[in-house]
Image (tube, rainbow, N blue to C red; front, top):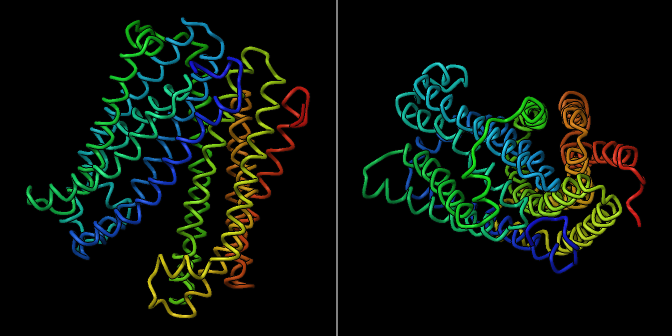
Length: 443
């Protein structure tokens, strides 16, 4: 399938969605293994450095990755328009932005000391943290470039290559890190170098793949400067996405500070219960990605009925998957937590883990609706809705952190997800009905 404006069938759409879904499950599952390997080869001081600098890596994700994801929404619409000139302008405009990000990232890596001060990295860690932080600051631009190339390739209906690279890449990242530590004699910076090599390597492979295929080769081998309207669209898409993620991140930061005041047994249980929830939630993003691609390309062709029908089918498909997750959570929660944490987990921690796991899995249909509507609205060109939805989620996090958790304790923590996903999902659904000509998600 060259794009999503051809005659769509269940076989074509789910042939795109399933590799994306499986790679998300595999890469998220492997992250647990990767964390265990990291703990095996790095000492406690090195792990503390990684945790202390994690906010910097998260901010690079919010800015670089979210911005290029926003670019991808506009490029997807250009693919749907079948206007080759517009596609080239959009891609090369986005690439120029990415190259600027790479330059800024390399320059920023020279300022690791001020960044560590800003990130409040403890003084006693800074000698070990400096080489790690220096490399981490280089990552952002290359991470953004890789993400942009993935967006472009997926816009042409290809999910297998990005899925395979994601799955193989996380395994190679661990092997590279271990090799740099055992044979290269490096310390904690080996972890950062492995991340940097991963993003550069995957970006090079994605560029090579595009050059081997006619659609990608046509775009890459005919560079051009973007016009002002194209730059404007890229800017609005990129900024709206990154602004949404920064707002969400600020709300989550305050919320997590409140969670850290919980008793140790409860906090341990929360961490173990949240891990499988994050895995299941990320798997639903495949439906949202597919909905955004179909919406953007068919909006350009004015095939609104096709867009509405497939968004409805994807939403129902995600709800069916959520139903399976709910049955598993309600039936096997203690066994799953024991499998993850080991048999020596305290009874209080197990109870806390099972409670947050079950309640948040019950809320997964809300997050699925939230993500799907959010992607569909951005694909329709409703940029302003992203900061609105991000702001709504952040305000709910603040409300729980400042009022509800102090009043009701851990049960409020468990139910917070239903509120922070449910309210934006309702707003997104109402706006989708309003902005999408023809209204409801039905034929």
